[in-house]
Image (tube, rainbow, N blue to C red):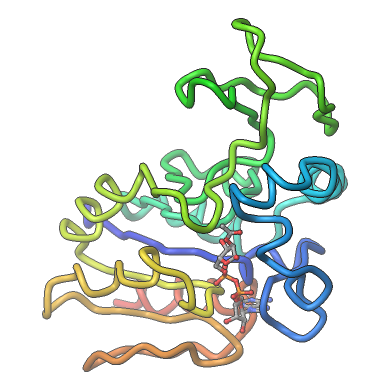
Length: 227
Ligand code: OAD
């Protein structure tokens, strides 16, 4: 089976009702990223940061995967599909994708502020200040904030280097190191980009599918499976 590696961003979850970050009406229009998604923000104003992620988590419980997530999961019938996602939602998993690597953490998990290896599934949507790990330290959202290392990056690079086909869905490619993953593909690997707005992808032979994720993944499937 050919290895199909997919890099996804907030756009793949837009049709599920989750806001993207940089589009009109996106989250970074309402919030300053430095106030809610950095370790400095957590040190300065943990109430605000915690409320921001509690809100995101509560919304996630009200959302369902969309046709884009489901279409990518269905591709597992034909390809060895690996999803590398910048998203912290669990919609790929709920749609049935079996191999999902989260670059920027997971909203439904929390971890110890004292030991990053102590990671827990949160019961319900609400993390409270005062909730602690088994060693008694405050728990924080299991999110990779700006300025923090991306521990899953080496694994992601290895996957992209092995890709036979590479697909990008719903990311503005603004945030590094994730945005640089494309450059680890071999020159002869076909690259497909699904996004209603073309992100800056400078590479020969890229096929742009200028659609939302639901319709775009359907088109991709037809292109990949045509005899
Ligand atoms: P952005 O908000 O930067 O980009 C969203 C992309 O999705 C844009 O290119 C849109 O054109 C596209 N889009 C919008 N609706 C779509 C739809 N229905 N179907 C397909 N595409 C659609 O989000 P990301 O690139 O994911 O990190 O942002 C990357 C990172 O920046 C996030 O993981 C987050 C953020 O700050 C952290 O918070 C650490």
